[in-house]
Image (cartoon, rainbow, N blue to C red; front, side, top):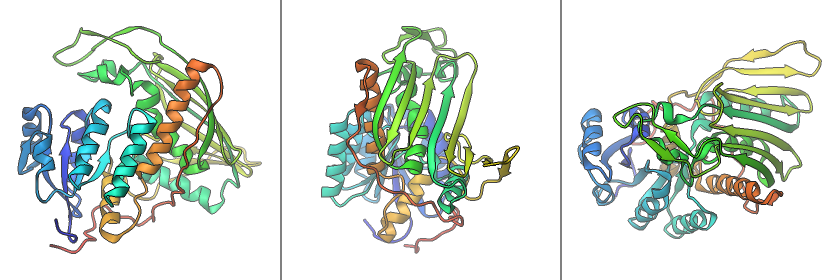
Amino acid sequence: MSGTGPLGVGVIGAGVISGAYLDNLTRFPDLKVLAIGDARPQAAADRAHAYDIAVHGDAETVLHHPDVELVVNLTVPSAHVDIARAALAAGRHVWNEKPLALDRDEGQALLHQANDGKLHLGCAPDTVLGAGLQTAQRLIARGDIGTPLTALTLMQSPGPEAWHPNPAFLFATGAGPLFDIGPYYLTTLVHTFGAVGQVAASGSTARRTRTIGSGPRAGTTFDVEVPTHVGALLQFESGASAQSVFSFDSPSPRAGFVEITGTEATIAFPDPNQFDGTIRLWPAGADDWVEIPAEGATHGRGLGVLEMARAIRTGGTPRASGHLAQHVLDVMIAASDSVQSGQFEPVTSSAPSVPPLPVDFDPEAATLAPR
């Protein structure tokens, strides 16, 4: 495999989210999507034809492609580790959809495998690299709110079964609102406050079965395996704290609520599940919010894959790293354990410091030398 030029990418997983990724991966000049595979070869073929991808088939088709350097793993959560392990064993860098793994040991094993193979392991969410959240982080880094002290986040909805044609996996082990939506909010908080030290949480399950609301299986019921409402209290190693709600039980949708309060101001972030949005700042002594437009890239999913690819070529460290994702996984598992124990649970992993992206980071620029 070449060490110069656009990075060769292979995608494994041709489900709903693959379209959002491929819209961007196929247009960024520093990437070249060479192959796509899925356990359902026809699904891979459909995506290949839609995005003009030359090679399609199953996962092995992607892993054996000689020019694939980075595997983008878009499988369901229960398959993340197996696919990532196989890709690393084949000498490929890996980008995982979130969560990184379903338990701490498997996530840590992936980090060790990547390190031993001198490979990069990255993980969603990459929304934290979008213009909205990056602008907010730059304001905090500049000192506009003083020292960050506390946070409040909220995500509630009726649940994804109304719109997703195959939603059962979103209510299975490794998903639910905590593991499916939590990474967007928790990664944002870790970017702001650093590592979490301990977590307390409570949870509940409103209904033991749910009904698919769209697609060819509409009307079919499936079992719910995880809490569908989780409230968490996070204590950071810095002494800061945050309260968060993750719920699939509310008829009233309310997403994207993130407020960080510092010694000098409160800042309202855009939706951490989006790449753009307006930032609002309420300085101490002010009478109302001040709106600040976002600056930076708003392209959408795949931004982290691109930033990782450029880091691979230049010898840098990806911002959406496996190390960061492992810490967020640790936080979510601690919250899940606390739901059962009724006590604060420790978070023993560390979290890397993540510098903001340069405001002029341009996904559509060709920054890598041609082959």
